[in-house]
Amino acid sequence: MVSIREEMGFDVTGTLALSISIAICCSVKSNRLQGIWAFWKFGMDVKQRTQIFENLASFARKCIFGILSVAAIPNHVAFIMDGNRRYSKQHNLIDGAGHRVGFSSLMSMLRYCYELGVKYVTIYAFSIENFKRSPEEVQSLMDLMEEKIEGLIKEESIVNQYGVRVYFIGNLKLLSKPVRLAAERAMDATAKNSKAVLSICIAYTSTDEILHAVEESCEEIWDKIEVLNDCGARFGLIKLGNERNQEKNVIDVSDIERHMYMAVAPDPDIIIRTSGETRLSNFLLWQSTSCLLYSPSIMWPEIGFRHLVQAVLDFQKHFYYLNKQKLT
Picture (cartoon, rainbow, N blue to C red):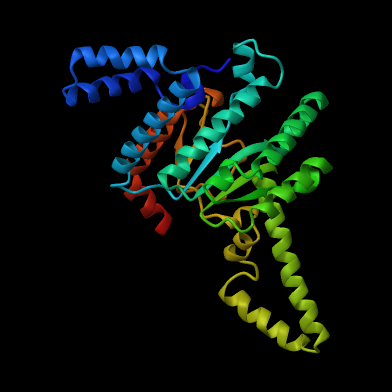
């Protein structure tokens, strides 16, 4: 069972301390405090108290984000959501429950990122390597993904609240038909959203992405060759090819990058991987040469607001070095 703190993404004790501090600063008399506490305890139901907690947490986040915004804010944050199965085992949850709790954590992190002003968020949802797991587990994950993808296009969903356009990144042909169709519906439904971008890497590995980009680049060049041949410009093409080879390769880095799955977003500024692991597990290898890797030693369902704040502070601390690396 998820605690209130995990569900809401803030520290209840800290929020109460903040409330008491505000009361003291405003010189509220002790008997009035007792009256407020009595009303808090007996005059409101759980839903009302929860709403007040959420409002206080939202206000506190705005204050913290206001301070963070004085320095550089990351434009793109990527997440490797590691530790769902271990979390489930440690808490004696049924199969798949860890991933459901992890989804709740993902929704909280997306909200925090968009509140902070991060425009691009990318998540590593399902690797091609994950297809090697047991058929039962793969099918369970596919069913969960279909359910959650359908939830993304609901009117009250977080992507519509923040105007987020959704992309599904990877070799989508490997997905089951229901999941693939759900992904296509979500992309179509959010195509007009323009305030932020959510890239969901599913049936993805970086090596597959690079291979795909090289193949697409080669096919593009070959198509141009065939068009020129059909126009009777064979000699001119050979001459042009020789001139290009003297200056640079026929296919260069920009051609490959243009055909990457992740061409829809700039390179990440921060990659956050939970469970304390520092390996990228074949995720954004091409794009991550000049980004910060933050690896908190908690499992994905346990990630919270403070971890994002710490990642942003680390990014700001190393900003000039990282920015210099990108420019070289």
